[in-house]
Length: 203
Image (tube, rainbow, N blue to C red; front, top):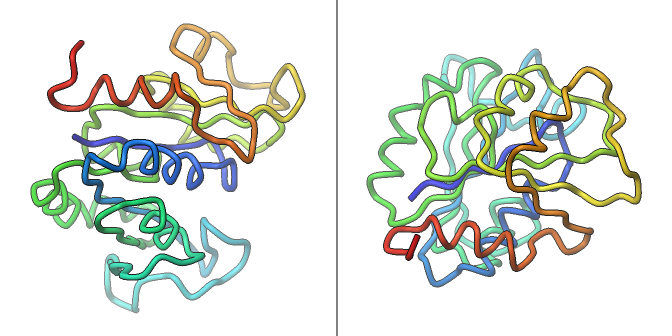
């Protein structure tokens, strides 16, 4: 089983959604993967350079987290993941890590990945897209993936409509939506939606 959690921009709550789902569904033996892409010495996770980019000449870097902690992969372990990894690639080079992703999928009972672009490499069983109406940025790469999402997680910031103007509302209105209010990023209906798609679940 592969669950993917993506989002239209940075810092919209993807990590919190992943950690929350692991916590609610921890009996399902999760391997969690955080994917970070960087380009021109700029990290997709943090503004500016953070040193997470692969070594010169290497297409990607993969590290496993072993202790719960404040890092994103550490948060996954703290939530109950059995294993947690951080995969870093240069911008546009994620395809070069396809082999290692496939290996993780084969070795794991259930995998949850924090990334939008990974759906270009693997077909998830469930793809959740996090939308934060208060975040004005909307990455072009996320726009083209909207119709591939199975459901949307809408972050409640107290506004009724999105700040972006070039994304058709109908794209997400026709699919299941789960309204969440931070710091609670996972609700019972969202948990049941994902649970219902796990292997062996009654449909």
